[in-house]
Amino acid sequence: MNESHIRDRIWRIADGVPLNLGNLTIQTTDSDKLLVTGWTNTVHFENIKKDSVLRELEELKATFNELTKTYRDLNTIIEKNNLIVEYHMAYDDAGKVGIGLCSELNGELNWYL
Image (cartoon, rainbow, N blue to C red; front, side, top):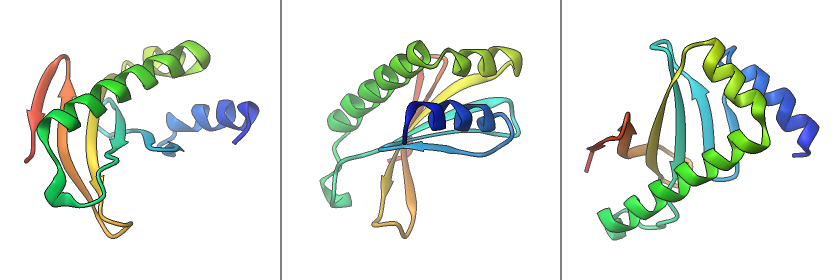
């Protein structure tokens, strides 16, 4: 996806159209949140460990932070729509189902494991 296409897609987030960038999905909710979901690199669910999920959550937050620096339109959407950013880590079961692992909202971590 080229930079111009990403910019166009960022503006569609506010209309409820999710943006998928690699292992990252950004979408809005009806409850004034911007969900930033990262998909774990762990292949087998039984191998998921909290410490690796936490590490991936920190990577997710850093990646999103870099996106907001590169694409300032993302900040505009957050501010104009009064959105609260909520981070999620999830497991992708080979496209069959997404399983939530944890979320972070306002610095508070919630585990689903």
